[in-house]
Length: 109
Image (tube, rainbow, N blue to C red; front, side, top):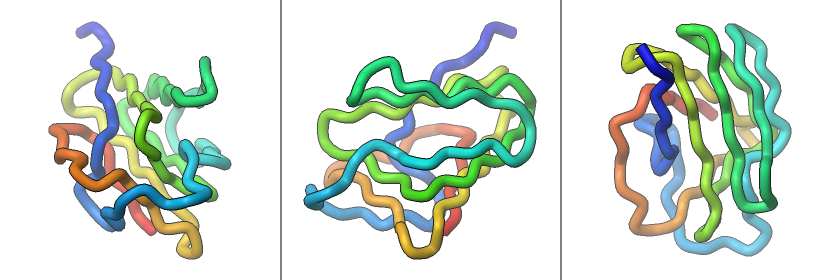
């Protein structure tokens, strides 16, 4: 099956929804600690996580998405899972009005 691209709008667990916060930026400090994935930033406002294993675990220093920023997960298939853990001191922030998406991404803080 061809890789499936998912735009990360909102995780299904442990996220703080909020409006525009000063100092927020695309996710920072991503480190793959389980499975196989690459993290790239082709532009200042775009982050791409290309997961090549069925399951992956990524630890982040922070995971914020400001208005105008895009975080895209590319996963092998519909049943792939990415567990994204965020440092407790850096809760994730998503712009107000973001809609839940049908994604295989879980976020923990």
